[in-house]
Image (cartoon, rainbow, N blue to C red; front, top):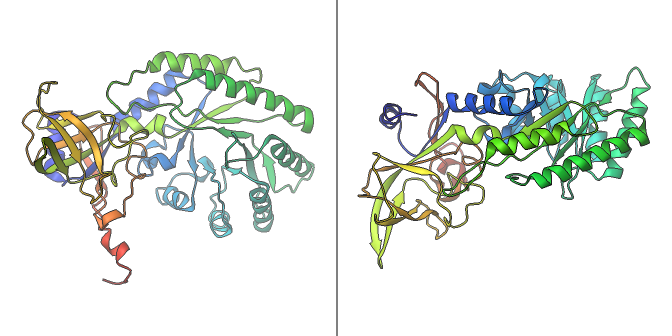
Length: 400
């Protein structure tokens, strides 16, 4: 966003404030489309940024939903159910009944355990609906199932296949092993393992795997000084995909890789002080409002800029940027060189479009949730959420 847009935002809205930009979000999806094989489909992980799903509907193929709340959000935003991937390590019966009763099972339902599978089968039979089930293969964590259990589930799907009233069909295999994966060696190992497992499924069940949904965990750059050649990374990753023995449809599920770059977070300097030779700036936000993956006690400098803008150098005074929480942990940046820092200045934190706004300890100290703004390509803004008071949630007494 340019200077005029920044000034307009600060005149219209009070800080702290999240801003997500349409142009940056579309540019990011376009870059991924250009860089990856044309046949690859994109699935957006709603947990990364539940506010922007409605703006992605025309440019991504699916939405991964990991909780009842995310399912209700997607329904309210009018996202088509045929694009849903109802996922999550915990599927409870009430929310799954809601999904069947409200026509939200038109996409894919993942199964992370045999218990989940049996629940899906039971409800599909009860409601007379046919659904597509995709078992999740574990990476050795609490998520998904091991190879033998996954094979057992697929065999059950084969048994159903022989019945014309089958409540479920086998939709493919889902696999995800973590985020911020900069190592192509890890991708190479994982894709080779998945190739072998697809062969095993064919040999032991007689079924072809219709699709692989793979979470690549593409990294986002959050901190100054980090170097990452994304163009070469995506090119080599694409080569790895193309080199798989099993040429089946592939969907890449990602959140950070799509949304991180579209967001900025604005926080104003509320107070400054000098204690024992250290300079401290108290911001009107804190770690309850913005969290970057890999940030630990502000040891790394997030990519940020100051407004009004000014040039800074290593010779300028260094400041510790602290939040508004009464905890020593509320450090956002340590020893940041800033020239002529004053109260009222605004810090703009970049690449805050994924997880930053939802992973913080938002209810701590009962400070308001910041407003969320969508900025259109023409510079117009739309308020997606006004600043919300938290104290009512923490008061313990209803109807204040």
